[in-house]
Each structure stands twice: as structure tokens, then as C-alpha cells.
Image (tube, rainbow, N blue to C red; front, side, top):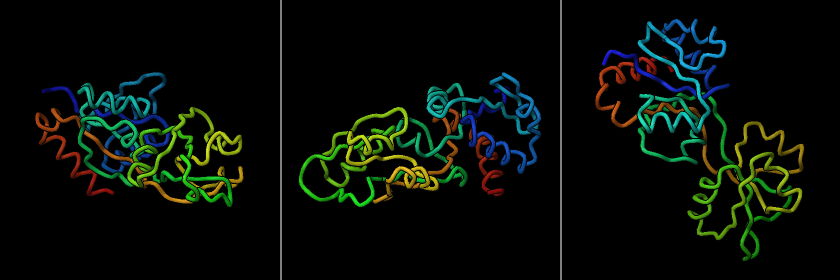
Length: 209
């Protein structure tokens, strides 16, 4: 195979952090900085081709083999699952999934089915199944903090960085669900066919974390 290793990056903050890591590895990322509206960009000295995509699409592209590797948050991996290898915890983009309720609300009291609002129904369902709890999960696309305030839900499962938005809306974290950070993933076939190149890149990255 002569084409470069194709790596999908999650647009936004993870993209910036990954490009910072590539520069640390000594790669020239000029094409990414000067991308304009281009979505496929060369990093010639790393023998890489960068594809900029939304988080869910990074997983789709890697799973279907149109990209050999990807950088995506553990939150997306946990929600979407899929057939690919998770290779390295890159350590940036750190935050967590947490269960939050209205301040002072005793979430674990009583025997009724609790209602949970979240953008991540699979993560929430899995968390409460492990606890053996019956819950009704409601998928929300926008600000999940609204759900307990409008009494649509008893609690929310959401990504928490600083907790400021929760506090400002009278909510508090009552339990951490899972830590999140950026991960390097690879297509299962690419990992076999391009093992040497991928291993070389992984070694370089691990040496510079």
C-alpha cells in the first residue's frame, strides 16, 4: 500500500490537541492550519492523511475501514461501541460522565422507577443495569440540565468538566459514572495489513505523552 495512513480526527478541541501532539512528534502540520474548507489534509513527513470529522463519524469511518485510525473521546466510544481496536489513552480531553440531580434530592431513596435524561442513553442504561436498577431513559439533544428543573427527570447522566453549569442550575454530581479522555483507535483490518507503520506511530506517540 502506497497511500499514507489515514487518520480521522474529531473536529474542535480534540483536533487541536492531536495536532499539538503531531507537532511534538516533529510532523509538519501546516496543511491542517491552512485547511480552509478542506476536510482531507496531508501530513507528509508522518506519512499521514488527516480526515476532519464529527466524533460519531470518526468511529464510523474507522469501523468501515475508510480511515485506518482515529482520535475520538471515550464518551463516543462508550455510547457507540463498534468493531475497532482502542490502542492508546492520549490523556487529553479529560472529563467524566457523572450522575447529577437537583441539589439535596435523595436519588437512591424509594422503590419507584427513576427517570434519567441524557444525550448518552447507552452509557446511562449500562450504568444502571450494573446497579440492577430499573430506569426510564429519555434522550435529550440539547441542555440536559433542564430536565430535572422541569421535573421531566429525577436525574441526568452527562459529561462534566468543571461542574459550573450544574451549580449554576442548582444541580450537583452525586456519583461519577466513568472517566473520559481522547483515545487512539484503529480499524481491525488496517491493524493487520499495516501493523509495522501503525506500531511505529504508536511507539512515537507513547514516547511523547
